[in-house]
Length: 396
Image 1 (cartoon, one colour):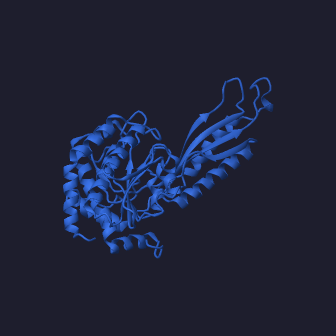
Image 2 (cartoon, helix red, strand yellow):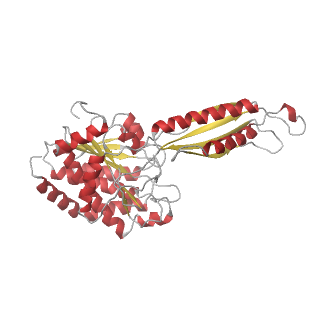
Image 3 (cartoon, helix red, strand yellow):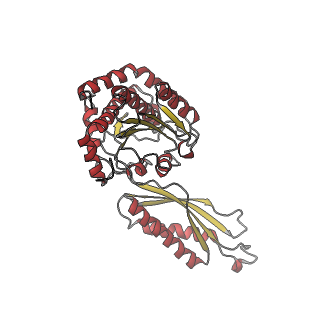
C-alpha cells in the first residue's frame, strides 16, 4: 500500500461520512420498494447506477441473471469483492435487512476505491440477487465470477453481534410417488394409493429424524395429494427441505432421503421419483483472519463482535458457495436486541430504524477498511488463503 494505512483509513472514514445521507437514502429506498428473487430490477438499477457514476465499469446480467451485475474499479490483482444482496421476502419486505447489506456493500466499495491509488489492486461490487430463494451467488460462483478474486466480503444485520456466521448447507427435493387410480369402493383392489405411500414416507422420515446429527433435519410439505375423495390418487408429491451442518453431511442426508423413498415405494407397490428442486447452498466456511480484521475495525465504532454461541445455527445462505472458492466473511451485526428474529415484521421495521442507520455506516467503513487491508497487506492475504487451503494457487 503506497499510502500509510492510517491515511487510507482516514480517507475511508471521510468518504463514508460524506456519503452517509446518500447511503441511508438508498437503504430506505430499497426498504420502501421490496422486490422478490430475480425481480429486483429497480434495486439493481439503483445500485449499479451509483457505481457507474462513481467511475466503476458495470457489467449487467452477470451469469445470465437479469438482476445481477459486477461493477469493477481497477485491473490488477489483488482483487476484493463486496457483495450486495437486495432481494426481499414475500409478504414481509426487507425482513432480513438486505437493504442494509446492499447499501453497506455499496458504501464500502465506493470508499475503498476512493482511498486506494488507481494502480493498487481492484475493487468489485457484485450484485447478488435471490439469496432468499434461487441462489444468485451460487449461480455466479458456478459461472466463474469469483475465480480471480482474493476475498469476498459482506455483513448481515441480525439480532446478535457475531464475528462468524454458523450457516448450514441446504437444498430441497421434490419426491413424487406414482400409483394407479381406482374407485375406492367400485374396484379398490385395483388401485395403488400414491397418497398412502407419501404419508408413509413422512412417517419414515419422522423416524429417521430422531437419529440425525445436530443441525441436520428434513422438513416436508404435501404439494399434491389427489384430486377427489372418490378416487384413489395415482400421484402424490411432497417438497422436502434438507439442512445439515456441512455440505458433505447434506449429501449424505440426500442419500438417506433417496433410500427411504425407494424403500417406501417397494413396500407400497408404487414407483418414485426424487429430484432436486433448488440450487444447493453449501455450508459457510468463515475466513478467520479476515473476520478478525473486520471485527477489529468495527469495534472502533463501538460494536464488539463475539464468537457465535455453541450449537446455534442461523439458517443457510448462498454465501456458502462463494466461501468454498475464496476466503469470505459474513459477520452478523445486531439491529435489534436478542430474543427477536429476522424474517418477522418486527425485523423489517428494525431494518429502517435509527439503529440500522448506525450499523449501516459502521459496517460500510469496517468492510472498506478490510477490503483495503486485503489489497495492501500481503501477510493478511496469504494468511487467508493458507487457511482456505489454497497455498500456492498462483498469485493467490
